[in-house]
Image (cartoon, rainbow, N blue to C red; front, side):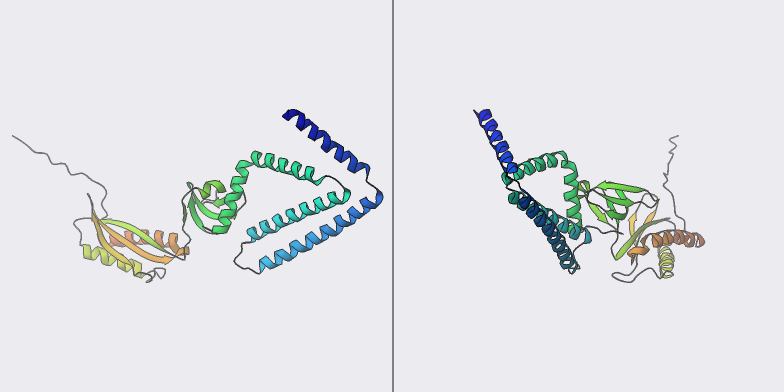
Length: 280
């Protein structure tokens, strides 16, 4: 019974199309062409106007603005298509059903890509990072060079380009290292036999020599942090500008080592003391 009704409905729709096509004449075709040309011009004008209005909102990302304009353009063109079909006397219900079926099949076939697209929109909207930020996400680390609709491109320190799917990013922990200020944290081991006051003074002197070390939001910190198995561990904390982080960190490690060597303060390696007991 259902098959019979489906076949009957298909026959009825086919008849409606044949009937509509048989009634076409030069006047209706020319009128539809005029509607199509004028409507297309109005769609272009409306999209340009919308884009200008969105540009006035400085907080709206350019990629999001482009997506919104394109969505509006597609909707307006769809309405224009239905208007032209109605003018020609074509069955608009069949067109809507056909487009809906095509859209469903397309969405199922492009499920993963649509998931990445949604992830891209989420990233552009929530802004966990921006182009130029140095981030760590989904096991990858580098500078964000492009935020696309399907993937985000990261450039590593050794100039490798990593493309991370946006759906992976939205489901992962994102660490953004591009804050305006960052803190360099170092652990410096020194010998148990050295003077801790002297070691701290040497490290503080190294820090004071570099203008990249900031006094805000916290002055440089050098304190005994732990008594390890082979060394006394000194914790060093220095605030700096985010762009100076890696250079300052490397400079501090190198120059603290040099100054400790000059003062005869050893940086011990892991060692094990073995005591032999003679029971004779």
